[in-house]
Image (cartoon, rainbow, N blue to C red; front, side, top):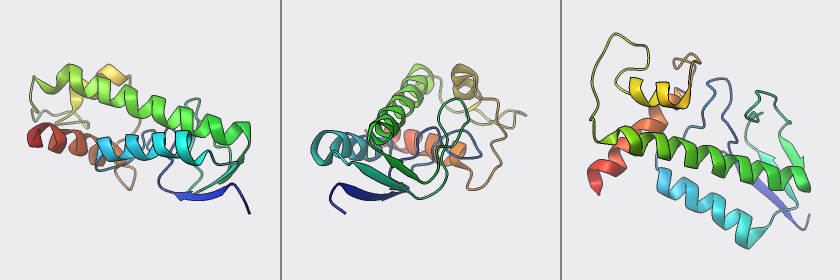
Length: 138
């Protein structure tokens, strides 16, 4: 209906099982969220998966009204938090370590990220590789 948006994977809150949203281009992801929030202003979002709030609770794949606004706000906040953590450590470069978070161990620690990064679709690594690629491109 009017105001419905099939968001799919364009709105990922705090991610799914891996505890972090998975996107390969942080600038485009953030811009698409802002566009949805500021221009489209959906009344109902149909998410691609049962993504979770920052407290780990999944609202379901359909969020409406104030919950749709919250989904966009949380998605933006999480994307901004990940970007800020990346920026704080980008100058250190990436280093291979024995950590399961390698080569992004410092960013994981900064975020307080303790989830298993091996959960498919490996959102932790996809997202941070996207930040690395953007840093290298620009």
